[in-house]
Amino acid sequence: MNETKILIEKITEGIQEKKGKDIVVADLTKIDDTICKYFVICQGNSPSQVSAIVDSIKSFTIKGTQTKPFAVDGLRNAEWVAMDYADVLVHVFLPEVRNFYNLEHLWADAKLISIPNID
Image (cartoon, rainbow, N blue to C red):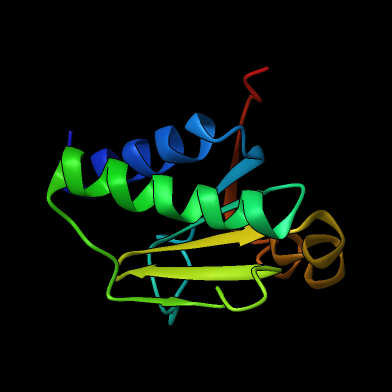
């Protein structure tokens, strides 16, 4: 398995560890001129859950792949936090903010993979 796939797996595990919901992996590899190869999109129910998901993702990616995000943006109000792992951008949203920006629709050409919620 290549490094990027393992990274996505660890990101997903980090999200699930903190009960992040509605995880979607958008495969952008077949689309020209994108800023990255994959988006991982998910949501938490409150700013504190969004922050906990971000911390969990960091912990899982460091343990599993020795990879840290190059940048994390949006933690101050934790409504939409973006994490930059170069080839993978992670977006952790509050539900209403996710609905408003609707990234999945924006990248409609991407191959979208939904990961079932763990309850």
